[in-house]
Length: 339
Image (tube, rainbow, N blue to C red; front, side, top):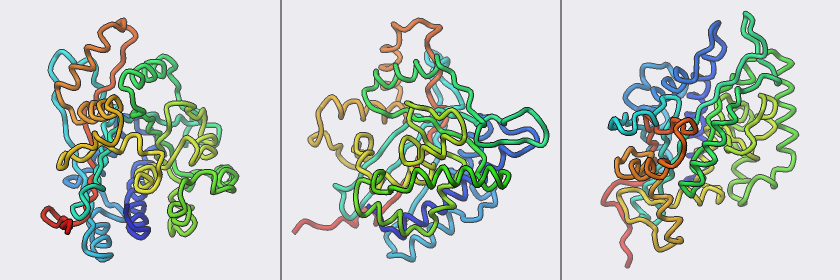
């Protein structure tokens, strides 16, 4: 767990990334999913982020985190995977592999890692005209066959690891009436806060967050595979139900118990928590983690599982890139001795 203040700083940084990506949907020719994903990868890569002029950079974030107690820092890295010819047709650059690591060098038993496959979806303008216009009725192109294949893949993997990554313009980028409508839809959903938060710490953090309205009025969202919102209005109406802003999706891993299913896979630096869960669940979580990490043995195992599916029913799912976001408490060798 991290402090409320640290969580606010992390949300602020990820929200700055959100703003930089989302404004590309407002161009005369809105960027395609592949281009938006490429930019997101650049902004989540510590080596390339400086090329973009973020209003709150990774350098500033780590400076603020360090001033809290000197123990916490955060880093991003992008791994580009090379696959053998046997699995090349399973790759798409629209998908992102995403790994979130929490390394606690003071209390090693608190360390964990969560892995996801994120399937990108871009909001379409309401009408094909210039200037580009979006409103609450602007929708996503839903591929029902793709959704069926994703359900199948989730079932094979045995853990809920595939999510939609929704690219939308931020409400502040839209006309005043649409912005007000989206705000009204969010407020309606959030009136009964206790319905969405599973512990008092997270509820209090939400109520006191310095970034509340601005960060919830986001452009990038993570959505469950089930009930993909049909339009932008439904995205904002679904916040904290089946949909979270990307920044809050990441931070809630540190407070929300609903992520326990996927975050109990320990970081590679430490032993896995095999003893704390059923063997079948542990094996599934480890398998997903290895797939997202690009490990050949895990991918070959999945390809074999898919061999009985007709070729025209298969789809691309392996990420060309995997984003690793690592949050560390302390440094190696800092562990607290058990007296």
